[in-house]
Image (cartoon, rainbow, N blue to C red):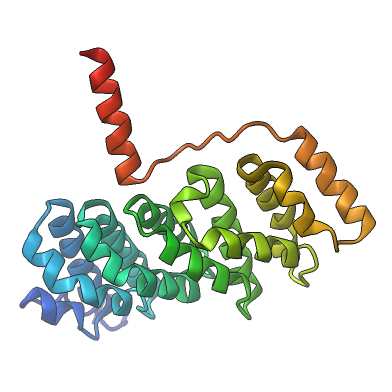
Length: 250
């Protein structure tokens, strides 16, 4: 008991990492997630292989403080793990992050950044698929956050990084104009504008069935849109850019 007569907080448990990750005590799980993040950041290949498949489950942590640390561990994995390993679990990781973390004020920003890190790790198609599903989520906060992340992804990386999901994003952007969710509806024009930067006039016919006022709005946005200005690169694109820079400097 504390001096105030309250139960003393449970001490952080000791034991193997795998056991502590499953602890019923959230503070023990926090400690375990922090240790796991350090292993990932250090490039521990054994940890990557042992815990990769566990990450979707860890991201479901029902304690928001522990979930926050689980997202940090997942982000370390996305930064350092081989792309082949990431590809195996990226979709499941993102699906859980959208469903369980996008609606949490404490975790939202880190979960959205996790999406960007996974795209950098060449998992853009899987990430985009889960974000598209998220836009239709029954919880308005989750749907809004997914729409925001989808727009950010296209803006930051362009369409090539999300592969075949580009067509699905175009179709979704049209539907978003009439969404009953204000946050989703608010992202419709920005996403359409980003798409137009890459697709040009060929995109316009996709919006032919919108209301006249909406069409006028997007026509004005398209006319004012500048050129694509991606701010992030996938690992392969970054490697090519670095090689080109090195060759130019030689």
